[in-house]
Length: 387
Image 1 (cartoon, one colour):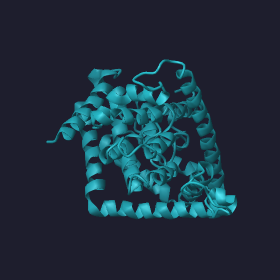
Image 2 (cartoon, rainbow, N blue to C red):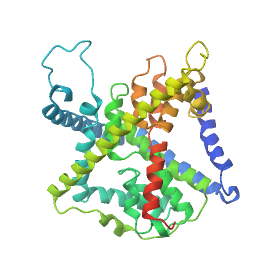
Image 3 (spheres, rainbow, N blue to C red):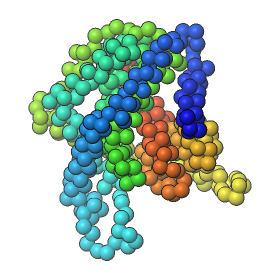
Image 4 (cartoon, rainbow, N blue to C red):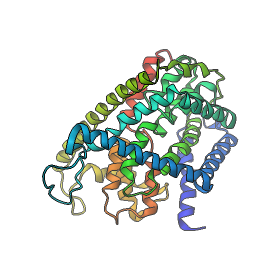
């Protein structure tokens, strides 16, 4: 067994141990259930990463993402001209690879949102969500309401996924409600999954396959941590009918509404990015008043690195790369994963090894950041004010 394997194994049980230490009822934590959840996660990882035809299927999905990205770029080039990726009417200084995020990267969110609505109308997405929900019920004993809400997080964001169980949110106990919330923060929706894969592809070949894998295997991991922190029994609730709460009159109606919803998300992402980068700039300017540490100015990135470096060691990151990886993890937790993934692609080649880059791709996958927590609490508080 290599040193990295020992470090990763220690980290696996170390993270579970941390969750157990802050559990509200340590005696109620079932070691058998923890073992089953770990086994499910390992089996999923083996199926996806080691079974050739599964990885081949994900590679096909990667080509589909590339086609979507090209289609979105064609659309933005038509609407925004050279600022959207079209031919420039004049020589572009530098290497000619300047990218305008708002016009060349983010518009894919609108395209995928419209496509997701169409697939929902054709009953493909509801079928997949229901299948995942029943699989969670049978393998991990998660109740109907919690399992449906958790399964929906694989395709929808922290705001949309609770809507599928809004009829039973008030009936969920505290443990099951925490399961839904944890799952929502640990996975990424199908819409932004494509966005992140597009960003990462230049530095991580097969990024789509890895992002899909990270989101899927994070689901049982999230349920494990949730059940350790707040133990509870499954609440049996039939929520299949909640999948019918979202419907469209026709395929055209689905495309139109999906486009409208995607536009709202597109504008929200732009607004958040503007504010986030503005706040980081303000923070760095204030920290710049402090004396230098180690021959360099104190910045928010450096502070994140110091705080999260011990945590990323549990992921299997070598000590020499812990500071750079810790900065990425802190950026993801305090700001968001989009900014963190952009920072990952902008790192010097020597900052993280290929292995560490792959680890951080998986570690950064998820909506666990302060803004998402606020939105999730707001949505659930509105839908289930008595819970």
